[in-house]
Length: 332
Image (cartoon, rainbow, N blue to C red):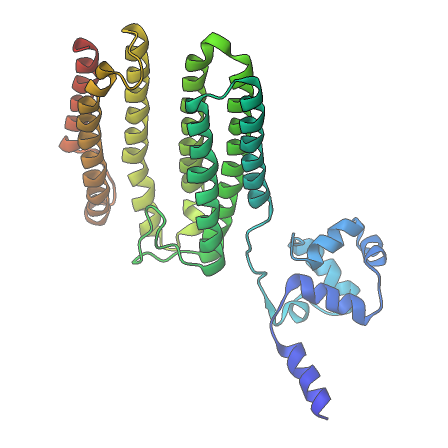
């Protein structure tokens, strides 16, 4: 009797959809191959369902329920959503990037092709971008704590499952791109020769543009899924204008620095290079102040008028950015 009660209790416990499919299949002594044949799918598809790796659509769920001799509502009763977990791929990519870096150190040391700039960039990508973000995203997905994410607001209601999915997508993208650029930096160190500085700068800028653009795109595309309230969606979408404007101007300024250094043949760590730090700090001060001000203003505009239009501070900071970029070239 005690054993029977335990079994009944176990059957009443919420199960993921995959575990429920596996449970009914085993109860009726049906193999994965047999079930796949009856449903006109592959055995791998059934295996993925049972491991909660993928989910069948509604039409397929009706066929599964009918095969086990019950209605869809009865079949889905007591089903819980599968837990969102971080896949192993981003961790494998981080390890691969570290391995590529070590290979470059060994091969570069043997061939006399070790460059400080290449080593620094590889370390930044491997540790401070790829590994750090992977560990942080993994922790957020595991604990459901998103308080350290940029733009997170504890007063906003989020769809936690969708937020976790977006973090996983971001982590996979960062892992793939970071590994690819680590390889490119290592290969170019052996092939670039006298053009190393120019190629190094182009690769560094391309990497930064890809990462920032991808993260913004993932964030924007997921707004309707991750935010529950329509008001919060409108505020977030409107706020993306000032974010995109800020990022665009940062890259315009970086491009200006790159062009100036090449026009005037300014070397890194030289007195002339250090002299440009003042323009950099002034530019960042103006644009960061504009970004934070407009982000606060967006919320007030949406709440008061239901729409957002850039204000005086937005255009004033844009004019100031133009002046700073012009001064960058007028005062070498």
